[in-house]
Image 1 (cartoon, rainbow, N blue to C red):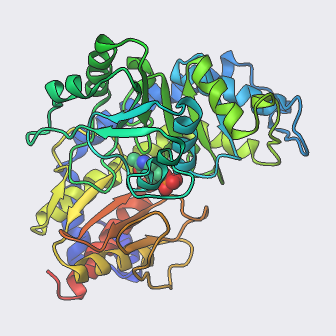
Image 2: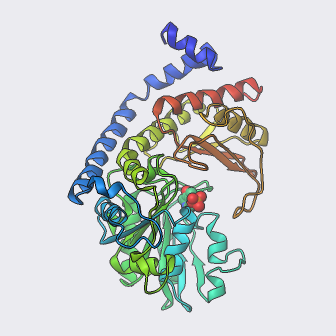
Image 3: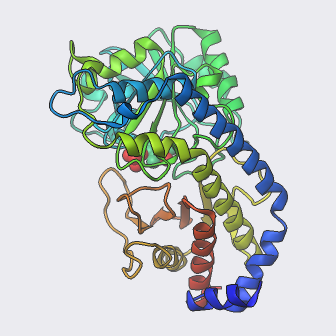
Length: 426
Ligand SMILES: *Cc1c(COP(=O)(O)O)cnc(C)c1O
């Protein structure tokens, strides 16, 4: 590393020896980075083509207020999403408040009393426990007479096909498959594997709705769950597809029928997609989607660099630095609450916003255990921006993600490693 750069890192709290260690680690990763850049190149063209084919115009960037009738910018953005995901339709709204809301909307609008939801690849994301009623909760699917079944992955991580076949009944109306790992120590599913699972389910009964929680997976590869048969692909705009610019929102891309059902639940029966003012967020939603492929690439590079760096320091990580990746999440199994807190302090200290605050564990709504979160983001809670979080429970894993720019992601990881070193935890 040259003198100016080293000097800059030292000013930013990184020891010269750690910065050099970073360079050594990085030199091993150039092949991986090339593949990530190629994926970003493909996805950039895919998004650009969708925008051109949907004839996005300057007037699309103007929002509406009030009811939001005839909001051409909103409708065109939904067309762009449907072209990116190759679906019949899409619902992309600032009124969808977060990923959990988008998922809950997809579930509640397409299930009816007496139906059963099946999770054929293990328990869904923690915040869906209360949506489904796995933990009793007001307004849950369970309260509306919608039952739930789950088939876990086999110990080797493969699908329990016999178990799934046995779990499908006449009542089974929908399956939910989570692409990313969430707060579980299990591998992220590749889109190809999701496709195999969907084919298996459709082979049992073709009218079962297959929904995929796509959070953190968008643009990690060149195909999406909607390309392999998912009826609904669902995610958050303060993760990958918002590109760090979208200040709010979620999406459901899918069949015309599923999206229509979701629209009646989001607004009201009879109104559906016709209302919902976009206010002033459309420029950020469009531009965020436009840069999302390269932003996701920055986050992927950050994750791989982190994995290799931590491996080098003797910490167990998942996925390993050499594993193929299907999302932007990295887990490091820190095995002690102190290390978990130290790591998160480092990520926080590297942030452009709120770098001077110290993250503390807290009882976050929707989560069972206390959670510590480090984020100093331009968009509050945005986890496409460099951020780290983890539940205070065994094995004290930290899950981290994001990095809107690769140089910032790299610095953040070095800062977190420095914190581990300085706290005497390594
Ligand atoms: C983030 C996430 C969610 C929930 O999104 P929120 O915006 O936090 O509500 C659901 N599933 C997965 C896999 C996620 O990563």
